Every structure is written in C-alpha cells, then in structure tokens.
Length: 245
Image 1 (spheres, rainbow, N blue to C red):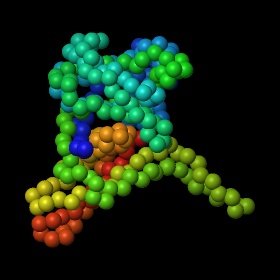
Image 2: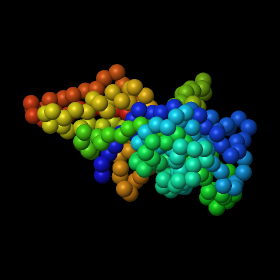
Image 3: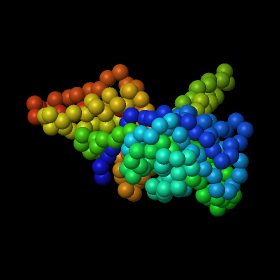
C-alpha cells in the first residue's frame, strides 16, 4: 500500500456521443455528482475531455458512474485511439462507483472515456458524475494508518413536529470525511497535503488492494492542521480531508 494524493487539477471541456436532456457532457466538469452526464442509449457511449492544449497529464479520477469499468484513451487528436487502460470502478458502501488511473498518459490534449454497451447487463444507459484530470501526484509522507478515521456525513435538515415526531430531509448526497494522523520523524512534513487540497480539487487514493473504493475527490476545508510533539524526534500531524460530492 502506497497512499497517494493526485493534485493540480486541469480544466477541460467535455462532449459526448449522446446526452439526455438536462444531463449534458459538461456536467462531468462539475463536481456536483447529483447532476451527472447521462447518455440516451444503452449502446457503446463515450465522453471526450478536451484540455485545450497538449499538456502533461499524471492521472485521472472518475466518480459516481454506473459503469463497472471504463476504457480510457488519450492522444493529441480528437477521438484518440490509443488505449491507456481499462479502469475498474469498484462499488463503495454508498452504492457509488469511482476509480483513478495514475500514469500512462504523457503529454496529451484529448482523453476519451468509453463506456461499454448494456451497462450491468440490463440495458441501462451509462452515466458519470464527475471527472478529474491531474497534472501531478505525490506519495503521502507516511502511511495514514496511525489513527485514521473515515466518517460519513449526510447533509440533512432535521424536522421536529408538534406531536413529537422527528424526521430528516436529505439535502444532497452523502460524503466521506477522512481524518488522518501521521506519525512523522523530524524533517518529515504533511502540510503539503493540506496545501494542495486547499488550492483546488485533489484525489486521495489510500491504495488498499482489497478495498479499492477507499479513494475520493477531496478538499481541505478545516481552519487548521494540528501538529503534536510527543518528543522532539517524533511528531503527529492531523489532517482532515472532505470528499467532494
């Protein structure tokens, strides 16, 4: 396991072979996964990302799709034909699929995401909540297994009725908050993790082989990063990252 942070997100425009009314391809550039791209047919469909110029690409992340896998192509001409990899999209505990691919792109302008016909074997049209293209990736300074906690937040409004009944009204998709504590030696740093995630959208991949859904698009929104000194040569740094949903 080598946990990574993908960072320095690149802007792009998106087109698709088809799109349902109200669900255009441009939605994949919007991190609000409740407004996805949705194709109009169950046949082979694709979304093409145009970065505007040929630029180095380190990685890509995809989230909130109904496809168990996506073929990723890249090149410097429209409709690139060079297959980079078939990306598996594991299902998480909230019944959402996501996945990321690091390396293999080089310097490209176009990235094509191809979705197989007959998603899930039941003739369902493919969809995609959001796509992220990153210019760089970094290994985390240490493995975030020193008191790591992943919690689920449910945006909601609590309603209390005069008869004493209470219920919650959902206000959007659930999201994960990843609280990491790093045990570091003197000279090791973890604040670069927060710095990148405060500058823009990032992607945290814990690289757990049997739980590949443990990865998320994230931002750092807390007002602080806490560094504790057990002794001069040993420190603990706490960083909280919030899933973009």
